[in-house]
Length: 200
Ligand code: GDP
Image (cartoon, rainbow, N blue to C red):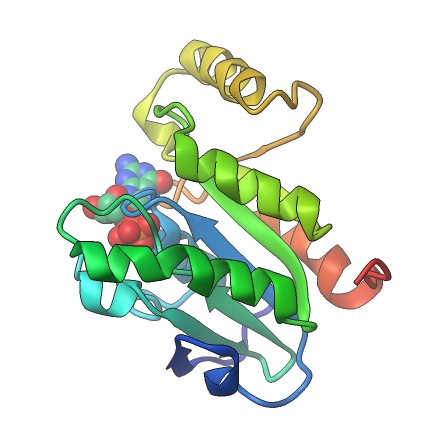
């Protein structure tokens, strides 16, 4: 994918704030600190596009980015950030579920897990929503540069077993080395340009 332009559009909490227009959307979801912003920046080839910071303010919103005037990246709020107040944390579920349920432009969710961590209750909840609302998703296991190849094979198996989806094919990714970038783009392009989700 040749990136000609990549711009932040706006932040939203509810559907009336979502940008108008019918560009197809690829959403990114995962626990706080999993490497979501880094992945978006690597894919868009823009270092500061999605903030790679732990500031809970901005990360508790749904952030929309316009790429090439052709499609949008949607950065869904991370979960599990310890310093987020309970009141904010409570909004996370309804905010994300509403987006997944109602956003007709959504084509694919890139669901990101740190390859070194086991799925928690919120990770499992995300998978349930994908199933329930019939949302196409792709599992990306990130930070693979932090472990050996042998450990990568082992961790991949453990994570797929925990999700009870042993046959899933995750993309193995590293924002540090760029591993998995082309594979991820290849998959995303299928959903942006070819596959239309007729289930919704
Ligand atoms: P977010 O909260 O999910 O948006 O996570 P960030 O993108 O801000 O990343 C959290 C931390 O993990 C930062 O210190 C990043 O530099 C680091 N990080 C993200 N992706 C990778 C990766 O693939 N490899 C390594 N080694 N570090 C990463």
